[in-house]
Image (cartoon, rainbow, N blue to C red; front, side, top):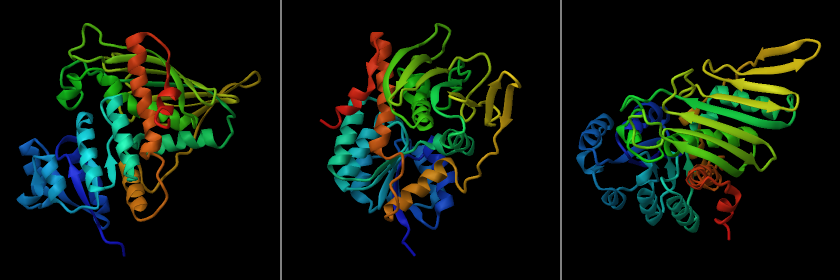
Length: 351
C-alpha cells in the first residue's frame, strides 16, 4: 500500500477550512496535513486544534513553513493575491502543487507562476470543481455523444444578489477590483471551454459596478467569446442580480447545437430541446450521471493518483492557464473597449 502523502496546507480559514473538514477526511487513508499556514491566528489555532497538529507545525510565516516542514506536496487555499508567493516557495522546495483557482490575481503573476513551475518540471493542478459535478458531467456527455450535432454557441449566466456588503462570503470580495471577473468568472470561462471542447480565440465586452452597489470593485459583466472551434459564447455575470438567481452551483447554461439544444439552470436538471414542424418543441429530461466522486473530491483523487504515477489530470497548469487568460483578456477588453486576442496571450507562453 502506498504511504500517505504529507500535505503542507497553505490556508486555515474560509475555503481551506472547508478542505480540512469536508474534503480531505475522505482521503484520510491517502493523505495527511503535516503543516498549516495562516496569518489569521484564530483560524490557525482553531484548524490546528481540529487536526491535532502540534504548535511547531502551525505557522504564520509562509517562508518558515516551507523551510521547516517535510511534505510531499502543498495545497494552496488562500486568496489569489498570495498564490504567487506560495508557488515560488513550493518551486524552491520542489513540492508538487494543488491550488485553488484562479492561478493568480494578475496575468503577470500567472506568467511568472507558469514559467517557474514549467522550468522546474513540477506537477501543478488547479481546482476547477464545477467541471466535475454530476449535472455538468451529464450536460457535457450530451454534447460529447453527438446526438445534437455540432455546437453553434453557448449562453452562460451567473446572477446573485450580493448588494448587501458581506453577503458574498469573505469581505475581500467586496473590496477587490473586478471582483466578479477575478473571483467568479474563472469558473464560468473554464466551463465554457469544457463544454465546447475548445479554447477562447478572442473576447470582447465590459465589466462595471452600478452606482447602487455596496462593493468597491466591478460587480457586473457582459462578454462575447469566439472559440477556436468556430463556436461562440455569451457570458453574463452579476453580483447585483435582482431577478432569477443563478448563483453558485445553479448557473444557467444553454448550448445551441446543430440538431437541438441542451440546457441546465437552477433546478440542476439537464434538458434537451428539439423543435420540429410536425411536433413543435419537444423537451426531455436527461438521466443524470452518478459519478463515484464529484467536485473537489474528484480533483483531489486525480491529484493523488497523479502523484502515484497515474494519468495527468485535465486541469493541470498547462490547460488551466488558458482559462486564466480569458479572465485577464476580459479585463483588458473592458479597459480598452477592444477585442482581445486570447490565443496570442496564451501563445506568448511558448515563444
